[in-house]
Length: 310
Image (cartoon, rainbow, N blue to C red; front, side, top):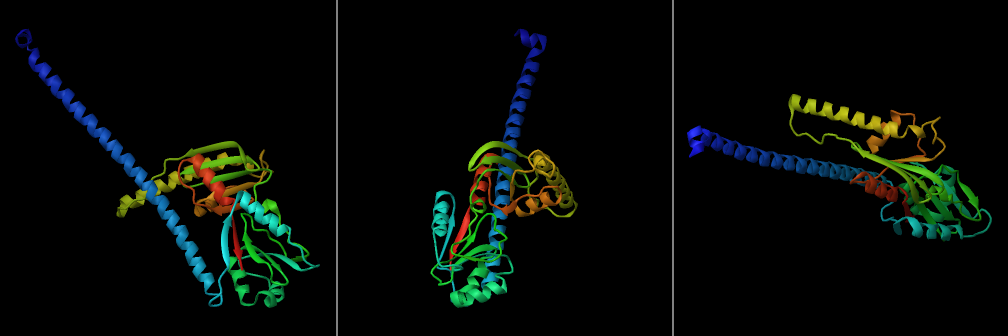
């Protein structure tokens, strides 16, 4: 009664209306924020899947192109991906192989295939299967002169080795397995992580993510503006990556520590081109998720050797 006499009843009703409207707008805002977050996550997942599919397509196209050079009906007898203890066991087995003087060939094979001098030596041993060695390039080839053992190995760091005939195979374990102090850095357009390792144990870590826009489906000026903003964000991200790896550039405090740079191929290449980095090796790896688990996956993928029995 008093509120009505003083004119406060209508004010209280108005306050109730505004509070209800405020609650409705808050719920709408929260729902919109959740939708945007879900959309951003979905966009990121889709972009990562596109990257994986593009890498797989490129691999299959390469296999198809190389396969045209092989003789019909010729295929590898066995193919396996080795890492860790299993890889060590296979390396031990290859290292234990003995033959007569100059009976075991170890040769680095680049993208152009076997050198002609080596090809002539192996023609009688492998015959048509020699094409499989070219198909595995770049790789390390181990063959004995009796054809008892013939394998190709694609380690993380393919050695640039001249053909060597000896009574055993020449295998440098540091090309296959993590040894000593080294660093592995993972670079994506929106993510960076670097770990310092003593053997296979990580002793230091740093990682971060950057806010980089995803894909855009609209055309015209809107798309051009979107792509320009995205390119600027990627440039800023790569600048942060360069700063994080400055110690590994020539003259830096960690310049003597081997650096392996892995991640999205285009992003890795751009980082190397735009910096003074001289990584020991680079590789394209498929590593998604947050920085720390993504780095773990990248390291596992990098330190994997493909074995082909030809």
